Image (tube, rainbow, N blue to C red):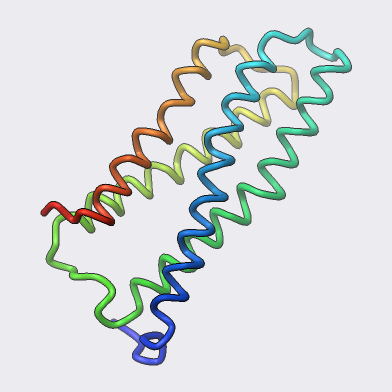
Length: 150
């Protein structure tokens, strides 16, 4: 199903989609890095409380709106005639990686709640490794969207 009224706005829809993705990715790269540093702080310390505020603001004021905006403009692209070749394999892999990215966003949110409640049990190494997940997913998504290899 497509909506022909969206066709004249295709380039604007793509533009706003890319802008939203950039904001979302910035947060997905930065929040796990905050967790790396937060792990080294004493629970209940002034510094730990400061990190809790930073993490909340990043997630609630930047990442969540950016993710919602990314999905909104992505759905508008799907509904735009001619924007996607549904038979192309690249589209399916890209969409799977976007679903995984959304799941990673959810994991970041869960981890923030654990820090907020001073119940984090994971090490800085765990978060350093987790910090690589959005990079790998981003590389796959960009290659699929631009090169469309299959």
